[in-house]
Amino acid sequence: MLRVKKNYNNIIALSFFIISILFNSIFNEFSFDVNLNKYFNIQYLLIYFFSFNRFRFFSITTLFFLGLLNDSIAGSPFGMSSCIYILIYKIAVYQNTIKLRSIFKAEWIAFGISIFAAYILVFIIYSLIENIYDFRMFIYNFFGTFFIYPIAWIFLKYIFLKIEVVGNE
Amino acid sequence: MQADNSWFDKSNLRVFIIFLVCFGFIYLDSINQKLFSKTKSIINDAVAYTSYGVTYPLKKIVAFPSFINDTIKLKDQHQQIKVLENQIEELTEQNKFLKKDFKKFETFLSEEDSVKFETVKAKVLIDAKNFISDSFVINKGSESGLQIGNPVIKNNYLIGQITEVNQKTSRGIFLTDINSRVPVLVGENLYQAILIGSPLATGRLSLEFLPKNSELKNGDIIYTSEIEGILKKGIIVGSIIKNTENEKNMKNAYSVQQRYEKLEVDYVSVFIK
Image (cartoon, rainbow over all chains, first blue to last red; front, top):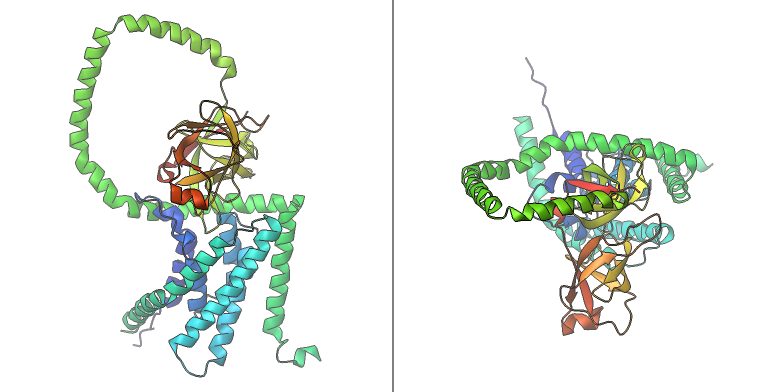
């Protein structure tokens, strides 16, 4: 009898993303108080990675609802995260379709462009609605997220490759 | 025809519509449209309780090593408590005359009841931080009488203010949030100033609008100043730290050391009247 191969990659990817939204709530049980979100944005990174690698659950509709969930938890203007997520998704998918060679450098630069566009949009929305003009945090966060991407890329590729191998065995 | 255009295909049209919906939401949120606010309030309540339920087992898993550690230490602590209890008994015997003073104090406290603040105890459901905001969600809302601007207290220290009230939950911002502005009184001379939050501040906050000739010492206490109907006077916020010469060039001469640790914020009190 043929056994159906199960691939849990998509569910695990979605779980990773939801945990990243609830990260602070889960890990404030640790006896340290470090706001990692101050230095880099894990969510942007995950969306780009999963959209670029065409994970099934990372579609426009899902990202719209995940964005609303994030806004509800973080208290940011309702609808803002959805906008940002979809923007990153579109750039990632576009980059994925036009890529001629599968080189990491091109993927990394495209990631930089997509999060740069995302931060510009966040800055515009915040400065229009909440009168926040302090752009230092945006710059720190942008560079933090940009430079952490290669490490996260290696980690995620390794994890999902392992899961795929285990799932196929 | 537009539909034949490769750029303006169905997928892009969907993205365009969703973008419009998102911007519509942002606009309605910014103008506090009544129906939208009510719907958002219901969504916020549902999300807060669901997130709490979802994260609860994960929190317990994460906290398990420290639970084991605490259990191991429990025996030692129990012995220490016993020693302390014996000491207390001895001290109580030795200082019986203090009981008389205590009775006087009790009478004084009962007379002071009329100026006691009414508080609501609440549990922190979500600790929500991102690179801009530093906020939390508690399990009490408009049903319990909470209003926007109510001060949030932990161990008698101010830790933040309520910024959004739903029916069953509320959102508060920590003093480190970028939108946090608290009028304060500083030092023995009670200089007036504004305490300003910044997520970039690591454990320290900055004071602005201090009088030019103000002279403050290290450790001077900072209290809240009164805003009628919103903020009570005299809640302790933190203490003064004189900045070093290098820091002075970059910002103010003084900064503020908070009196609480964020990781301790599991239950809080909110002043409601």
